[in-house]
Amino acid sequence: MEKTFAMIKPDAVQRGLVGEIIRRYEQKGLRIAGMKVMMVTEELAMKHYAEHVNKPFFPGLKDYITSGPVVALVLEGKNAVAEVRKINGSTNPLDAACGTIRGDFAQEVGRNVVHGSDSVESAANEISIYFTPEEVLDFDFLPNKWLYE
Ligand code: DAT
Ligand code: MG
Image 1 (tube, rainbow, N blue to C red):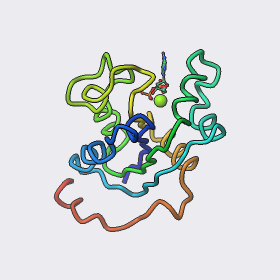
Image 2: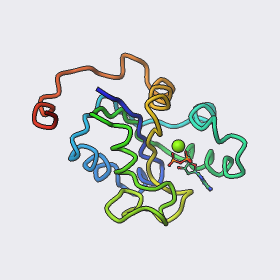
Image 3: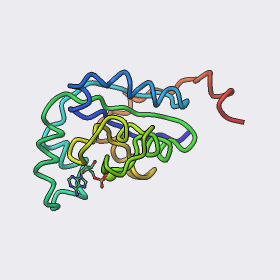
Image 4: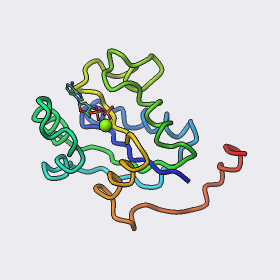
C-alpha cells in the first residue's frame, strides 16, 4: 500500500489543530503507520527542504518549521500521496479551496499549517529523514476491506 509523509506544522500545533487535522486524514480512510511529536532541527529542515534551500523564502521557511513542535506522520492508503495533497489544499492558502485544511485554517503561504509529500519518491525520502524503519508499523488495517474493492 502507498505511503506518504505528512507534517502538522508548528503553527497548527500551537493553534490546537492537531486533532482536527488528523481527523480529516483518518475519516478519508488513511491509516496512521507512524506518528511523533518532535522538533525539526536546522539540519532536518535543510534535508527536508533541500530543493528550496537557495530560494529567497528559505530563511523564513526554516525559522517557521524549527519554531516549535510539529507532528510527523506516515500515512498509508491507496494513492496516499495524492489524497493527502488534495486534503491539504493548494500551497498558498489564498488559492486553497474551502473544505481543504489550508483553505479552512490558513491565510498565508508562510503559515500553511501542513505538509504533504509531492510524489511517491519524495515520500520515501521524507519518511527516511523523519522516521527509522522500526517507527513505521506494518499491521493489518481492518477497515481496508471496506475501503477498497
Ligand atoms: P508544498 O508545501 O505544497 O509542497 P512547496 O514544496 O512548493 O509546497 O514549498 C514548500 C513550502 O515552502 C511551502 O509549504 C511553503 C513555503 N513556500 C513555498 N513557496 C513559497 C513562497 N513563494 N513564499 C513563501 N513561502 C513559500
Ligand atoms: Mg513540497
